Image (cartoon, rainbow, N blue to C red):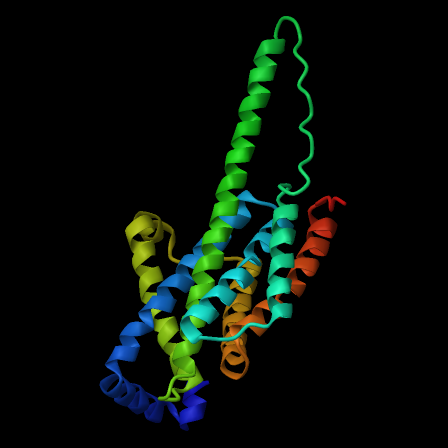
Length: 258
């Protein structure tokens, strides 16, 4: 897209070199959101691995709160009373979805003679493990929400700066930073596995669909940030909560409680 905007690959390379020489500070600053977006993606996958999809999406939508806070502190934006009320309702929704607002009573365990004590101990250990996974999932989504909120507001501040940079150039810069950091992490943690089976081992149809979805979503988010703002984007993504809950109900037998 940036090559099309520049009128060819050669012109794109020249523009990148000129921008790098004229604005080295902005190139360095873009490493911050690039790293945070990478942490966000990893945290989201960890969260989904330890928490139901619908609850995870609700937890992740707490980024609206952090986006509002960072927009006020970094961009000096004025948020209306209605928007703050919507943020407050979202917080209540996150608490209710995690079972903290109206906690359900835990089923009583009955002890049995003979081997009953062993079974009871095993049940408690399984419950403790499930609770631990739930805490890990909630923590991962909370970390992802904070990171993506700060990165988005930071990126909006750079996109709407006085230098009026190209949207596609900034996306290209983010991709370059994220790619370098991600590849370095893979080589450090999984070098032996990659050397033995290749870097794309295990990539199937749905894996590529997830990669394509993330790529298109990143481009769409950049356009929204350029021509609107992060708060509007966050509220628009609230529809994903409803879609995720319905999808989890249909595909994974997720039970939606009253």
